[in-house]
Length: 537
Image (tube, rainbow, N blue to C red):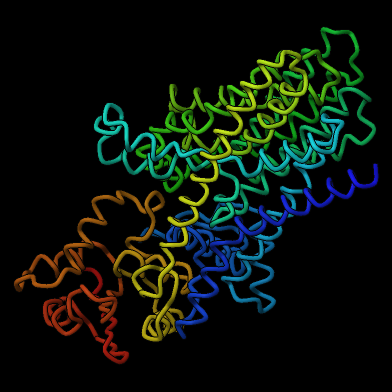
């Protein structure tokens, strides 16, 4: 009926607008804060340190093609290749501000995700209302797992400091709108994974008329994010094996081998980085200090898995339908393998995107229920999930938006004095790394093309010890202490930044006085100072 089609279109537009509003909320808040501050945007969208890591890679790509780790004093090998970041590097070289060269990925990633998830959903659910429910549910699904853990003393009290920090991060790792708050390339990988499941499933059913396309999809997914690449390969491989047993296979083993090889090559590349490059080794080790608690993400998925269970036991229609069922199983297996064996890191990243196939299965299972009592019970559970999801979404938005402040120490806005310091370090031709307070140090790495002593939780070697030492080094109220000068020398940096803001730091003149025995020169930039440390002490 025409009226039904109009309602379906209106519902689709409304769902799309909700996705856009939630996904762009943080970027809008950043624009409002920066516009009203008179300062310069740092480029941070979500966590400032993570955003600065991406910007540092983009700057490296613009001038060196391959990227290294800028968050250590010594130069590490330039061996990281990312086509997506190189696209941002090209925009930067063409004159686009570096912050926007990365931020442009946010709307691109959202558009790709909405399109790919819709195409996959439409391929397995015939009715438009069902498609809309699965599409919107898969992208917007949220659950207050973090709050549940906090209010469960039997769990929370046993987590310890690292576990409590992980509880604030890990459960939301699979919330797709939140990934757009600083991690749009992860969302692009999920979009490619959706496309790969669709294209690969159809290829298994119909043959492989365009093998190059599927090879590019598996290669691109693995290169964009290895967790999603491994999930795609595992999903298509198991789908092929099961469909082969049904005797209705249209793809040969040789064709599958070519597709698998295309996806495996980037995974081997990442494995070599994690084995041979010291920076990637300590990044993985330090990431697992927090992501060792990736099992917390299970709580995020429990309600959706329960509702999706009936969908797993429906009769199979085609390989795409089968691949949708296998995807969450492969993602869960990958998460468990990383946790139990230590192979790889950041286990919860494997679960990204799994809400999409689970939402599809939930809708399919509900449609096939014949018992009125069962449908009623499922409807009540879905209603409860919707209420919990709305609560969780507003909580996540409030938490994310609340972090965006004009304070120079927050990492979202650079004051004029911070811009002067960064400009000086970028234009100074003398080589050498920089020591600065934590957040400002990350900004220097991203905007000056210099290495820093401290800056990122996982890419800075021995981060926790250095963060503690830097906190002591820049804290006010310290008595004259030779250990400050000793730390400046021990760090092997060439420059020490003594900023006069944000508040709560040691005064620049005090720091200059205490470091005079190891200082070659001092450059005053207003009330800020940049000290050149004597080399070779």
